[in-house]
Length: 533
Image (tube, rainbow, N blue to C red; front, side, top):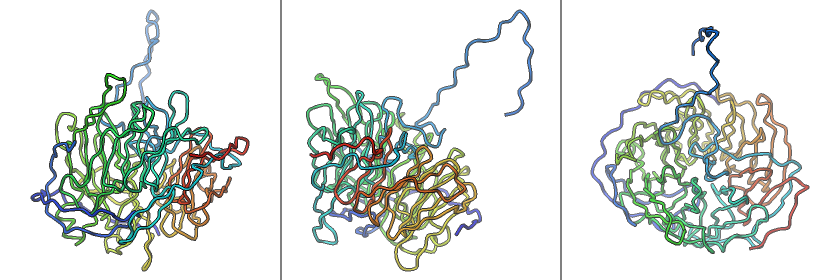
């Protein structure tokens, strides 16, 4: 149900109290729903040392003056990330989908064409990728590619590369054409369920988190994947909740921005370089660690579930994210390169866990998709899918919102919606896939599935793609006419529960499943053999 909400004034950012480190718990929940483990301290954001138009008048020129032949040079953008364009590719140096949802805006889903008459062209590996990890005090086997689990797909030296982390606790790098491994998998100490990031400046580097406490930088310019650096979530404070790294890092101007389930936002100076042997080097400095919580939030929620699982968004000179108690926030990073500290300039509480990544449209409106687990009054008031006017940072307005609220079972949004034209495509814990008019908030159409939809939908070339957890089917719908219930173009069953996000790259769809495998889907005239590794 769409509901119009009255504008509410948001309190200015308060001054945090003194620092208090809190220990985290090893062996945390591998699903987005976590259990509270720490008592709330009063903390202060701090810098940390490194652990390692109008009408144009008509003018008639004089007969002796020749018309101009040069095109005026546009003024280059100055800042961290150019905010123009809702679905831009990320890098001028590397073609591809390099991180979760492809870019610092988190709204780039790949490049077409989208395949037709789709079939599986390869699967990897020849046996399921599985690993053991704790769950409620017991070891449980986890297989395949989980939430968010989107592969990175990019071009390098005229070839297609694919990289992802999996539930076997390993980073895998494949040949995108054959599905064969380019390197032996790099094993970490626990499962990986987030999305890794490829260096956008063309350096042979991967950035990935794991459930083994570590945020890592790996190089791939040798004969094997090599760890160059790692940051242990337990090696510094303040922290709350646990030690996982699910969010996909962002790399901009030699800085890494990353959220962690230790409930902090981190800014790391990478100091990338090249050694005497011609191989990539890094010398990272942990510059800033800032809590995602404040005293006002902790007093309101009486909880410590304040981790950061969604991937950070950078727009212009502001970094945006939310935590698992629903505190949506924007941080000014304009002065970071000059040695300044980030400053929180926006605060808005939606009442419930926000695992889905935030989005902005071309008009600068913010979209937030939240879960509905604890049934808080604030969540019932504001809804679960919100369009927010943030033009006044101290007085944001909820333009419209949509409810997904069940009295008993969990509901709301785990998946990140897709922004395409004047529509938002969103999928829910309750199995709803809906097309929403982003201007009015009207639900134009809705499709229903038996089980939850955790995989984030994408749109490329007016084709909406979503995997389900019912029968492991990946479907494509024609959304070229946003005013109608879209017709199904194709469907292919890969099996298992699909929690991961797909990628489209030049004629193929790449997607993983909890059944243990990564797949490439292609038009039927290009089928290859199953890959082994």
